[in-house]
Image 1 (cartoon, rainbow, N blue to C red):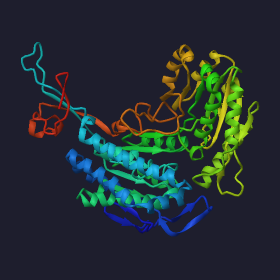
Image 2 (image 1 turned 45 degrees about the vertical axis):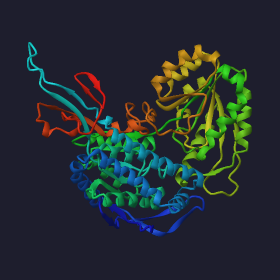
Image 3 (image 1 turned 90 degrees about the vertical axis):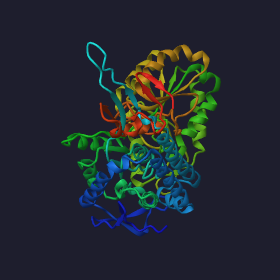
Image 4 (image 1 turned 45 degrees about the horizontal axis):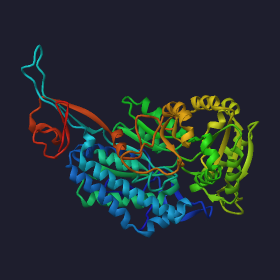
Length: 528
């Protein structure tokens, strides 16, 4: 597939006229010469949003089978791009071959998961309460509930996942599954990759004869285009993965609209790991090595990166620190996604290292001439220093973490109560730790969307039970997840139909149940 530098607005390829950009190779620290990418502006936002609005009703009214077929065809089209897609993503991100092959698998896997979700139809939560005309003192009308899509969704591609959280990533897949057209703003860090995947989606729209406004892909430098997209009245929800600053900016725009809309933003998390005493005594060295592997995976550019470790007392703590330090010393510096991310990481570790009472105890191998490469780092301080220094809870977004020494379990509880909202918390735990854990877990449940035992938080499975979300500032809405089958719930709203003729009802709640869905009938679950 030839990359043209054009945006995809409905069925059309459009060359933006609001300036131009080149893709950037962070490994070579240089721009990729061709093609140049034309940036869009308000006119392109208007066109894409209007097409999405026009497509909304016909698209959401498609049969579930047709909608599922669409998602599966997108997955097939992405796989059909072959090695060319992986090679382009490598050039634009600096990520290794195996990582991107795995990410492609995850991308098509979640599209196929949502195809199954659509076919099952449970996401519509159909419920019927039959009329009771003879009920006294007041009769009951016939009431039927089904969920429908909110409307067109704006999706912002993420920097750290050029495939799985980007043009055809989880936000796009779940919105399309819900019956919502999508307008994607491509991330500037992987423009060519975005165009290739966008064309795979555009082809699926065309081949199935769907309304062209079901999908558009826009490109814009800076914040102007994204802000215009969120402000557009045709857009009814936003999916975003990125910085706290960026997420809050979009939330302000969305809330200032005459019709405020939800912004589902994944923003910042340090994912604390609690090393319980019995577990530490039993396997401090293996925990230290596993921690080092998790911390440096993908140059630490995961939203679930373990940026804090909490240890209790002095016994066996040094064993963990020594093992982690030895493992980190063998870890090579790794190219980060963009020069901007690399600079931000450097500023973050300098800020943490500059706090009085924080000691740097380990580091990875130096960059040695590699461009935009991050050197791993490990710091140590105590609970009281953490509580008095808010900067120590800031995400460094890279291969750096801080060990927090607690004098006793009461200090652990004090620290846990002061934590910001997190995507994950992890317990390294053995049976002798269970009594203390029973005191700690209720606090952690209030702080995080996922609680792990005896593992590390990097890696998010795409499945029905996964939660990738959490209290602010990890996300803007702790009620939802951005990964897993229930991510579809973000883009749905319930509608109740009272006494409507059967022929006018959505298929999900028609009397004959033509879609064969499991439904709640008069309060009881009715199987298919």
